[in-house]
Structures are given as C-alpha cells and as structure tokens.
Length: 406
Ligand code: PMP
Image 1 (cartoon, rainbow, N blue to C red):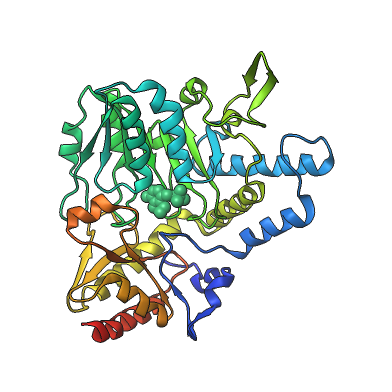
Image 2: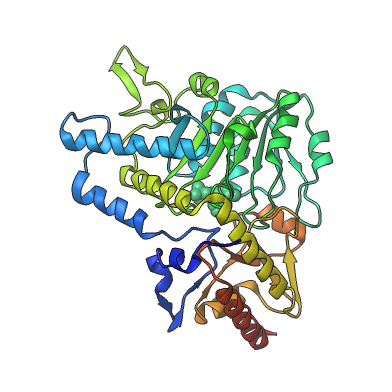
C-alpha cells in the first residue's frame, strides 16, 4: 500500500543528514518547529538572489515580481486549506493570528460577564491573549476539561456552551498530547449556540489534510514554520464578514488606501491587517512548502506518521517506569512521557549527547501539565521524514540514558 519512497523524501531535508555530538541527528522535535526541504530553502534563496523588492509599492519589474510571488503564495495557501485568498491574513504565526482576533475582534465586543471558553489542552498562545482581553473587558475565561486519556470531555464542553459564551477558542491538535479534537462537530455545536469559534491549527495543518471550510469555524490560526515553511510565517483565516467588521490591529503602510491628517481610509481585508513590509521571502518559501507538502500528499503524510506513531508508542511502552500522556484514539504523532526517577531535562540533555533531539519542559501548556500532576515531560514529536530505524535508535538511546539516571 505504501508505494512512496520515504527515504528519497527524507533526502530532501539537508539538515537531517548532519551529526550532533558525533552521532547522526535524530530529530524528534517537529512539533516545536519542522525541518525545511530543499525546495523551500531554494525558493527563499532565489527570491533574494533574483527578485528582492518590496511588495505592493513599486511599479518596477522587481516590485511586480515580488508582489506577484507574495500573492501567489497567499493563494496557494488558501487553495491548500480550501478557503479564499482574500480571507487569509498573512502574519508571523499563530501567536500573532490569535492576538489579532483578541485585539480586533474580542476587545471591542466583549463585555463584563461574557465568557471565553477554552480547553485545558491549549497552548499558552491560545490562553494568554484571552486573559489580556478578559482583564480589559471583564469577560471571564472558562475551561473545558480533558479526560485521563488526554481527550476532551466533550459532554462537559457542550454543557459549558451557555448563552454567556461569546467565543470558543480550541486547539485542532494538542502540541503536548497529539489529541485531535473533533473540531467540525465542536464548531457545529457552538454555532447552534451562536458562539463564535477560533481553531488553533498549528499542529494540524502540518500533519493531516485540513479543509477549513468544512470545519465551519469563524477563525483558523496556524503557523508556517511547523509545516516545512520558514520561521516568521503564518496566517489567520477569518470569515469575510469578520474581516470587514474588525478594525485594524496595527497601523502603517500597506494597510491604507489614503492617508491625510483629516483621516485615513483603510485598505480592504486582508491587506488592512498587514501593516508594514511583510516577511516576503518567508511567504514565498511557505508557498514552496505548500507545493512540497502537496507533492508528497497530506493523506500520505498522515498515514505515514500514524505508522511511525504506532511503532514509537509500542516501543516506548516497553521502557521500564515510563508513563505516556495522551492516548486518545485520534492522535497525531506526539509522544509526551516521563520516566520514574529521571528528570525530563536530564533525559533530554543525555539524549542530545546521543544525537536525539527531543523537547523537555512544559511545552507552553502549564495548565495541561498541572492536570497530569507533572512539572515537566519529555516530548518526542515525529514527522513524515522520520524513519522506523530512528525510532529504534531513539528507544535504544532512551534505555541507555535511563540506566544512567535511574
Ligand atoms: N498553538 C499550538 C498548538 C502550538 O503548538 C504552537 C507552537 N508550539 C503555537 C500555538 C504557537 O505558534 P507560534 O509560536 O508559531 O506562534
């Protein structure tokens, strides 16, 4: 069934052939940031070598080329996610995208007593902006809890959808547990209650086919650097009616039609929200990343990663004293664990000496770790470019460092 030559695909990622501490690198931190295939690196390089100019300003040839390439990237991204380009605000990433909604949509609308509903498994980027809004408006934050397996308590979530709830902000896929939330059904329920929905797609877009239109949310935020794209890229998709109603978040060049000291006429969305010179080369790279992911195929990527996940899960559970967090049925390839008697940072530090890159700590999700009663975890997060051999080597290295620590 698996006719794809994954070894050839892996060879597209130059960095993956390097060594760390004299050992071949085993990169298991893709939930943190993904590695970049050569076509992405080459697209940004080619932009600076051949086309570099600012966008939407100059009529000269380079300016036109830069603008066309930038807008082409926006349209590629839109097609990839089944939305329209003019509904996609390009920005530096999920954090910016969520803050844009917080400041331009929520701040002017929410009143004292309104409720912002989030889940226990949110990344801080989908918690802290709402706390800032709540502080200024008197709105309150309510939390939908997770179950022991790391899945959402859906009946509790639906029961929490009271008339006071104005916004539901929820992760598509958890960056700590890999839990994939049924966002389509969740948004359908929210809509029945007149609740506006924001989905944090940071960990979904890189790993599975995502059809934003089918999800039926109001806002969808994601980041480019986890989906083979350059750092400092990402986007907010929003329903056209929201983009039209929302005031700009930042003022400056590019986002205006006309400026006088008597007043300013803003540009149309999405440009209204893209003040200043954007990360042009980054988005051209992100466009190449979309081409690349599509050439591999998102369905194939999802299937590959679930095979790797099954393998890694089976092997990890054989490690003595290991506790794995997040065992939901619909799960992305993220493995958070602790080992009895070993500090997560020590594990990660010793694994690094074996060439294995994992993340340790709280993964920007303090409330979730509090729920599980641990101060930190180790997190191995996989991508389609990882191999079964790497999983074997990772497990061997983990057993080795465990014996040193326990
Ligand atoms: N949400 C989730 C679920 C994430 O995994 C991340 C990145 N770790 C973010 C938000 C924040 O993304 P960025 O740092 O690219 O803005």
